[in-house]
Image (cartoon, rainbow, N blue to C red; front, side, top):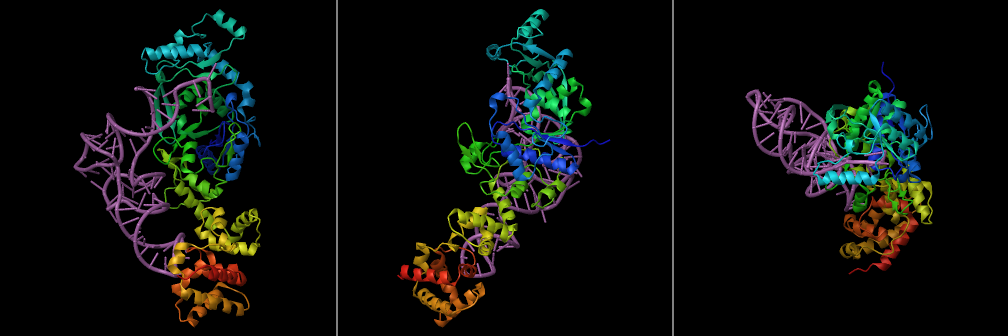
Length: 511
RNA sequence: GGUCGAUUCGUCUAGGGGUUAGGACGUAUCCCUUUCACGGAUAAAACACGGGUUCGAUUCCCGUAUCGACUACCA
């Protein structure tokens, strides 16, 4: 009895895929996997004016990066081809005509000037919401008001026209939403939406219903911004006679700005310096590049985890979920109703968790790439050691090198504040002794040995090691903070260490 | 303006007619430590308001307020 679940993500290729869209895709993916169903990607490119080159590839790339690639899409079609609405163009007219035949739609010949004039007239007459509806359509140029002959003549002459849905004057439209329950809307508040545009393309409303039906979509999971037009869609299913197979609806809460109110937008990204797009996006028109999470150093598994929790939660206290675990735990019932502010701090926290969970070897690869970008080189083993001591303090892979540069590059200057406070005759004595003992030492230079030798150097001069540690760190790294110093010594190696200490001894003055 | 939706710590949220209203991020303090970070511990921090219903409401109902979405031949 239960048919296979089929869900779709249906973005329009008008630019970079917004992070909110990515979450919608994720929820669709999770639901499909959870139920053993299929996740399809349909490109909604019915607006030829807004087509942006590269946007389709961007959408595909973003989903691939996150590992939530669709089961059916323009690139790996299933049995519902084509997956681009522009390529499905020839299919829609017959459905619109069917609606006209049934008396649920009509031709309209009004020019945009006439539409504007109508709205102005209504506004002037203080009509609350000026729209093309059951009242106003009686005063416009359409197949409901014009004589049949004239309509035929106009159509035959190739005059531009649109097809509009004929919304009933008085009807209660009931809509069931899996997240919000029953929503009731009166048809008098709906307007006669355009179904077929004058360029022969369907609008979203028509295409969406026809395609979802033909593609046997069982659940429509989309953003809350679609809730107001959902009653129209319900009406369309009814008029087509597809009520029995009408999909279930689930309208997701919106992603909001981190401060103030409103939908999260690119402006917020610029304002707060965090991305809202999954990957870098170069706008082909303006030439400007918008920052992406991927290039910003966010790990795909961290993004997935973070995004999943924006509007959904498993109901227990577990927070770190792999994709597989998300699939297992996911349910539409546990999706929240209210809008969610975008908290980049939480995203960073997730990133840190996943970064630390990675092996030293995996992290070393990032480190090596960054190091080679600067024309330097390092062997894998050493890179892994650096990754090991640096990963606890990194948020992004790039931090490994950014914060750990001193491992390969000797300091050329020293933090003045620390120097002023900590650099003294005792340190100089200890370090001078240390260099000597280092030179005498043979064999492997482990952190333990580095420490033992340093302790000897201090004791030999009757000085407590703890008192001079900060200054020792300063001498070798140039700064007052960093990972375990003895581990650093071991990684740097005896020779380099001695060199750095000599430089410090020559450079820093005891006041 | 109209229609629809939403409302628990600063943020993400759990919960649900009787609870010390729980967790996480962030913040603060303490511990660990040669520093910073990690880690551990602790703390401050919330049921928008007003009416009902009820022995009892943060929880159910109704209003109000606030916020949001939508209001195109865009999706």
